[in-house]
Length: 124
Image (cartoon, rainbow, N blue to C red; front, side, top):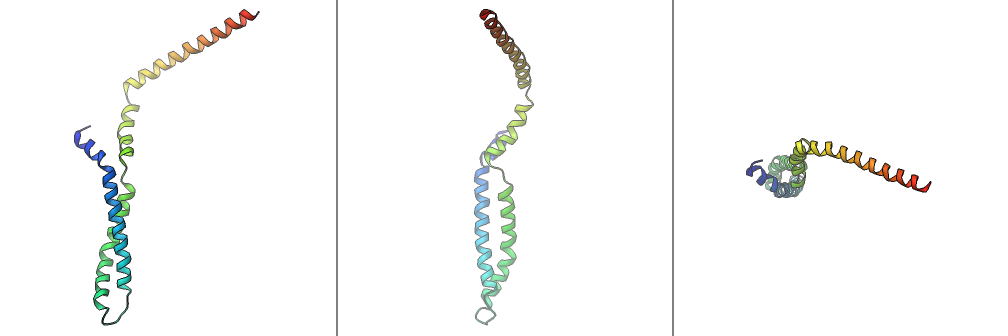
């Protein structure tokens, strides 16, 4: 794994916070633009209506993109698990440990059986 990958994995929480801030800001801007757009049809309100109409074209798509990015950006811990767990699962050392664990288990079972057998014989 390169240093560049490690850097970006460590920055994922900050990137998620950035997407969260963009989402909240664009949500507030969308709500304000709805009120400006639906503000009325008087001559005095013509400029806010134009601003609201323009803002309604800009902020809802930003809101949608922000929500999607915020939702699908993994945290640092999740990305570490995504990158590290397959390496551990496919490790040759783990396969050797599994083979040794089977042997150790058999030795333990045999030792327990011997210990139980000795106690049964000594009580007779």
